[in-house]
Length: 190
Image (cartoon, rainbow, N blue to C red; front, side):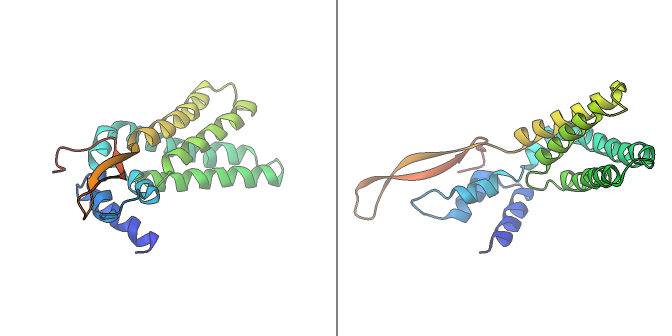
């Protein structure tokens, strides 16, 4: 199975309500060595339960991204028309980055929340040194955007650990094998 097909399968199974542990176990099969690449792919698709738990923070992040887009295109770019081309190109790129971030966060793309947090941090540094540095609302909104992006990336993705489990091989001997266990193991795993 290709990586793209595998990620699509993971996303559809988790959005259908399967737990990360069940999805990993079904895709991994009875192997003796843990597949951390597969575990990472499963980890970065948030479960429906986690999406519901952090829905308010997610909506706040989307609203802040909308504000950042409006700020870039309605206030920063028009005020920079008299400035040089590098200023215009950079801030246009930042506005397009926020626009792509809005689409990515709304679709729960892998790593989107962290990338938006990094964009918010960069915008905070830029706004801090620009002519809008005295506008506390702008600085607070970009700071909140940075914090919420990283917070949601951390909370929406479950942690996993690789452990050694005992099993009995075909000859009846007790052996150890590597296994992956996710942090939010569900009651539905039987």
